[in-house]
Length: 126
Image 1 (cartoon, rainbow, N blue to C red):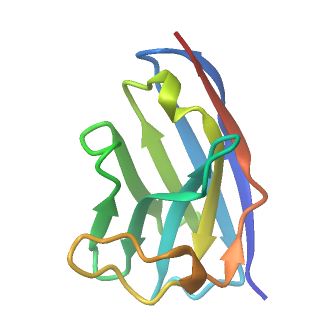
Image 2 (cartoon, rainbow, N blue to C red):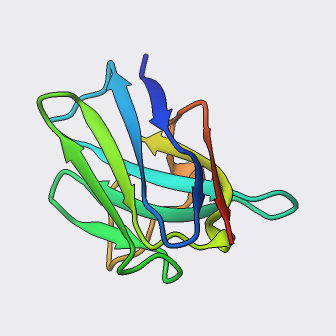
């Protein structure tokens, strides 16, 4: 059974940076597809970024050029580096695993993922 444990997040002023981590247990890193999602109060969950084992990435337009998804094979950990944060980035962030693959730069939809992290809050103040 795949278990995703998130860490990182917190509060930061606009323009600042944060890094989210997602440690994956029981997940076959030899062939993977993982992503980050977020949900702000009163809004639907949206995909932020995704990465698969072929090195394909996808980003939401709202975060392109500011966020970077990456992984550390040795630590079985997925990261989301968030720079130039804006107040509209404020949300609960979730990592997710076991999508099929990233195609044409599109983040796989949330129903493709079979495992989810517990969520971590990111708050950006103006």
